[in-house]
Amino acid sequence: MIENTVRQGGRVGCTDALGRRRTLEVSLTEEGNVCIHTPPGESAKLDWNEVGELLRRLAELRPHVK
View 1 (tube, rainbow, N blue to C red):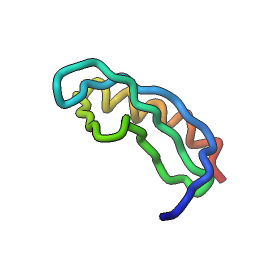
View 2 (cartoon, rainbow, N blue to C red):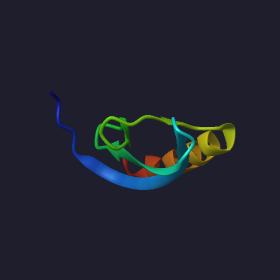
View 3 (cartoon, helix red, strand yellow):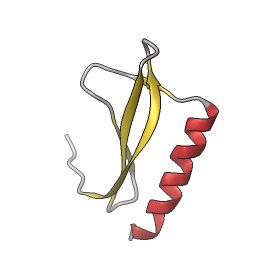
View 4 (cartoon, one colour):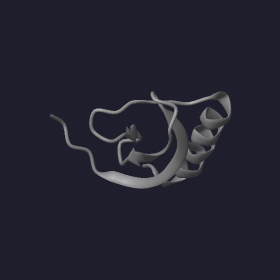
């Protein structure tokens, strides 16, 4: 298991597999990798608006990566 140090983070709204609204924690590691955190045993799906929000958040975080 590789452990990364989380550099910056944000939250993005989404819908889980049962149609419930959830919030995903999204972060970038110092290496520039994207981490999307979901509760254990759960998954999430994003519609195009949510994908746009995710991309916007990642663009905001990008300047903080080496």
